[in-house]
Amino acid sequence: MANFDIFDTIEQLRETGDAFCVTTVLRTADATSAKAGGKAAITRDGQILGHLGGACVQRAVLTSARQALASGAPQMIRVKPSKTVVNMTDPDGVQTFKSGCPSGGTVDLLVEPYQHAPRLVIFGESPIAAALAAHGALAGFRICLSDGAAPSPEYVRFSSDTVSDLGIETRDFVVVASQGHGDGQALQAALETDAVRVSMVASRRKAEVLAAKLIAQGMDPLRVARLKSPAGLDIHAIDPHEIALSILAEIINWRNTDKTRKANHDEKSA
Image 1 (tube, helix red, strand yellow):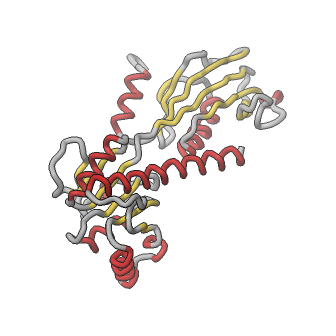
Image 2: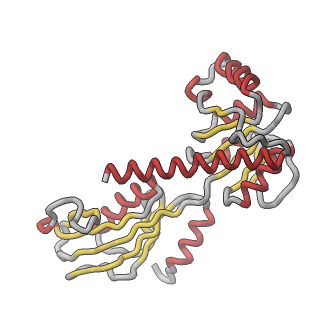
Image 3: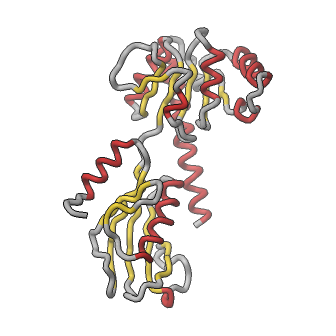
């Protein structure tokens, strides 16, 4: 690894848009090839870029990295000789992994997941779509906006035909704000993504009619059941910016509620 620089590697991984973990050696005891302060980046597909020690440490790090990426929370782990492991969690609460390496050393590591901000994917060219994009960007979301909307170099552009190229994940949010212009096609494309949260700027009756049509055309009712309409919290919003704020407030509430639920689940599982 001549001329290897972990911080350059981390920056390159950030630019790819994919999630990864950064693992740091915090402490070592007895003989070990790992050294305190050592760092490595762990990619989603299991590559270890950097030096953390031998095979026993690497196996533990890969397992912990998968857990950290799934939960979105950092983890401190300890790798120590098998004969000294009584429980898989030490008295200080650190998750423990058994090491069969002959060196007999103990290594404490911090595994930190890095994930880009969730995407806010907005279908439509309406004033509400433009306002939601602007407010969403200020709130830290990565904005994906329909091709025909007002130009902005800050946003990723897509169409109903190319939305699958975005690689939308369950933690992303999708809003249909087409408001009478290709509503059915936009809603179908939105519900075909993997986003758990899909909302639509429309009356409840209109959304029900469009959803029923999609089911009649063969869409899985479970996919359609994700739809929330009207989009947004009821704050008696009137103009596009107020409506956009109500939608964004609902999305932030969903995001933070999901985070809290996941954190509580992880604590109970630990």
